Length: 342
Ligand SMILES: [Zn+2]
Image 1 (cartoon, protein in one colour):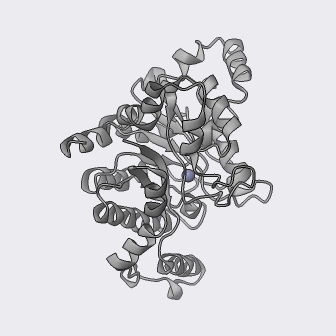
Image 2: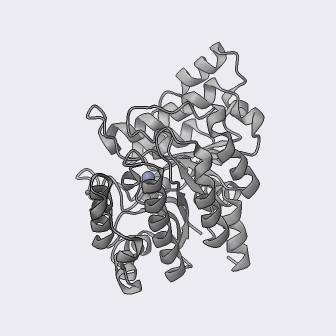
C-alpha cells in the first residue's frame, strides 16, 4: 500500500470560502455573521471536488490512501476569537469527515484544531475527541504559532501544551506540526513560514526534554523537516553542546519527517541523513506548489517519483516509507486498515 500522510482539502467547493468570508465580516459586524446551517455543500459537489483533483492524481501516481485534513493555510487561527475558530474548525473537519465517508478506501481524516492566540490549548480537546471518536480521524494538525507568524505561544516543550499531549497519548494519535497563513509580511506562508516552523519545532524539541515526560508522543514534522535534515550536523552539534543525548535517542523515537520535498536532490539528502524508519511518504497534494518542473517535465509535488528514483533506498526501505512507518506512527490508521483486511 502507498499511504500519503499529508493531504489537505485545498479544493473544497467555493461555498466554503464564501461562508468563511462572511464569518470574518461578522467579527466586525455581528449582523453579517452567517449561521452554520447557511453553508450547504452537497455530496455531489464534494465528490467532484475530490474526483477531479486529489483522487485523479492519486490514481495517476499510484497512491492508495491519503491522511486528509482541512486546508492548512485556511485554518488562520489568528482570525477572531476562540468561538470563531471553534465554528470554523468544526465545519472544516466535518467536510473532511464527509470526504472520508464518500471515499472510505482513499481518505482518512486528520483534525484541524480550534486554536486561538492566547487561548489555553485544552479548549481544543472537545473538537479533537469528536474527530477521533465520532469521525474516526487518526491524527491532528497542531499549529505551534496560532498568531500567524508572530510566534506568541510558548515553545512546544512548554507545559502550556501538555493537556493536548495528554489527550494525544490517551487516544494514541500523532500530531503533524503545521502552521497556517502568515500574516507577517516578512514571511511568505508556504515558502518561509511553513519551513521556518518545521525547523523551529525541531530545535524546540532538541532544547527541551518533552519526550521524557511523554515517551509515547509522536510528531510528524512536515515539508521534509524544514531545514533540519539539511543542517543535521548543526543540530547534532547543538544537542551535544546542550548536553542532550544523541538525536537518535533524544528525538528520533518520537519525531518523523515527511517527504514533501519537491526535487530529487532534496529527497536524496533526506533519505541519506534521516533513518528510513523516521520517514513517511507524503506529497501535500493538491497544495502549495502546483506547477510542472521544467527540468523533469513532472509536477513538483509528484513525490513518489523521487522515492522511486532514490538510489540509496532498497525495496524494503521504500515499503517502510510508503506504508510500514505510517502504520506504526498512526496506530488508529493501522487498526482501521486491519479491520478492512488491508
Ligand atoms: Zn500541509
